Image 1 (cartoon, rainbow over the protein chains, first blue to last red):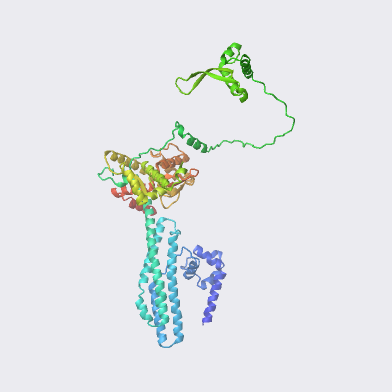
Image 2: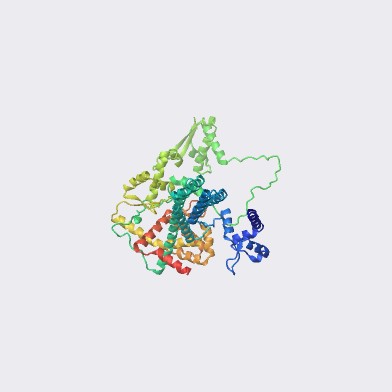
Length: 406
Length: 222
């Protein structure tokens, strides 16, 4: 009997493996595209209870159990099935416990062992399914119901999750540990299963579920706020469309001004650039330097490097012709040395009837004097003749210079 | 210069508070997006008290909106002159409501978002512009809203219209642009303030805007 069951199970799993592609296609698409599959394969899967046809004119689908197995194994986030039927699980557990106790008191060891194994299986799968449910709920919370597109859908998904949580929580309240304790009596195995294992798992999950519920409510609040704002905007447009003459009432004319509208006038005006303020010049220059020019005109790219043929040859001699003004100044200096007397530069200019403009002559004389090497400069004394500027103090206007030997 | 100042932590806190008070006195809204340090300072009771004491001396106070996440400067006591200012500011914001709401709805619809813009949300101008250019209905909406006095566009070209609208929104403080080299704009807390203003008007005048929008969408679905 049990070897038959084993063989049948292996056959079923082999079939799943052999038609893995087809099954996964059906899982993702929701139904089987019969035109694209081998009819014999489809038939076999139908017989094995892997595929089924809900209605005569409907496509073939995966059966619920296969689907659930895949969803769970793949942690598919679309899975929102939660087994909240705590009541029936509890009833089963109680029944099996009674069977076990009866078999024990009848000293039927074989039956008692089978019942205990069955009971353990149920208790463990129940605790596992509880943990799984909470995990699924957290998964949905953590991606904020990302598998649906709109805010309204998210709100509906959130409401579904909330109802599942409250069902689970009210289901957990069905567990009366005093009752389970009585059923277990003084049988050690039963106490371990019914009291220790179940209680631990239940208290952990109850705690977690209340956290889940809190987060769900928080999320719902946020979704509703977002939806509320969208509706507020749409409603405003609708209303102003319907009532083109609508103006909001004067909500600030009351004695008590709503704090929302109590906004002070700007005291400080926005800053503007004062291009006449020389103290800001540096900052402005920096700003201007940071401006990037964008030129859309087609400028041919400049070639920075290009070949130049270089030939080495003897460099030609060249000389700089002396400036006649400079020569004349040299003459003036010589004349001062020869005469040994002080002489005004302008007087010399007039005397010699030189063609230069008096101002450039003065500049050249001063320049000539300043340009002398220090040892030569020491022979001469140059005194500017003129007067301070009448308005701007510190400025001295040179009318003439006098040169003599030191 | 600021580098020198920042060497001393006490002094840099002073500089920070100075900037914060300046912003408040300029009529700016302080939120996490525009001035996170200042926003934190106002969230902290002690440093808010310091700012408050300063402002009180010139008949100003720190006011807040959007569940205490946006701060601005209000009057401590209201005299005739203050009431006049408030009344003119109120008129300004009422006039801005329709263009701003139309813009918010356009951005939300053109970018296919569930949520309307709120503080901290980013708008990529180039993406938005492409979507608007590709859809005649959006182009029409943009053309209509850009001509309101708030934006004052006279152009018939989408590029010029949208650039002007965004420039004005920057000036008005509804958006910031953290990086001047990028066309990414971030919504500020002033938008959240705007929602609160609409909600206030809705509730006080009993317009039941949300219910109207809901019935309208349900009619559309049918």
